[in-house]
Image (tube, rainbow, N blue to C red; front, side):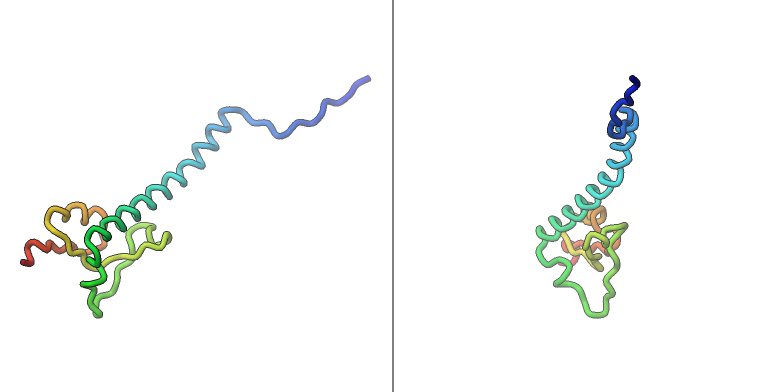
Length: 106
């Protein structure tokens, strides 16, 4: 009496599972990095309340947000006004913008 064994669910090796987890982690890490960048930009904007909107003139065209941030709802900024202590941080967070040092304006 030869009985066929019951058919099992699809089986895969541990190596295959590690490759699949790695391949899934790459796009998720990229999305996490973009969302972190947006959070940092919005935190910077809260520190200097109205730094983009108050000094945005009518003739300026708003540049697009850098990289893929526009797909996540982030908007670009034309000019960034901030104290000299924060210019380096502003340049890193807003590469599309013209950074203006408010200490040199006074």
